[in-house]
Figure 1 (cartoon, rainbow, N blue to C red):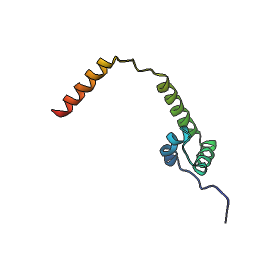
Figure 2: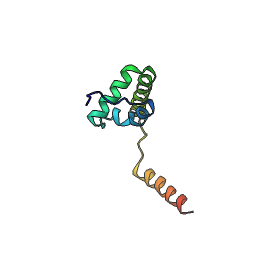
Figure 3: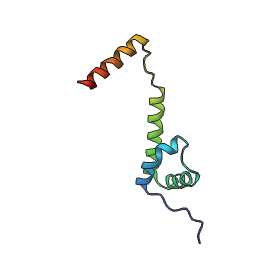
Length: 83
């Protein structure tokens, strides 16, 4: 029996990166992902790009709507779906 961590593929990393950045990966998967990015420059760059995109979108602010404007938009979408 070996204690080696099963290698994570680049494709698996892509599938796990969101949970990783949100801190939602189980410990074993987090370790596998971090082991992978320590030796894979392309995936390390990918994770960095996703982190940057998340930071940018997190900082984006949606304009505040008045309750009347929000209701008018919701009504328009309800009516659009009904047609």
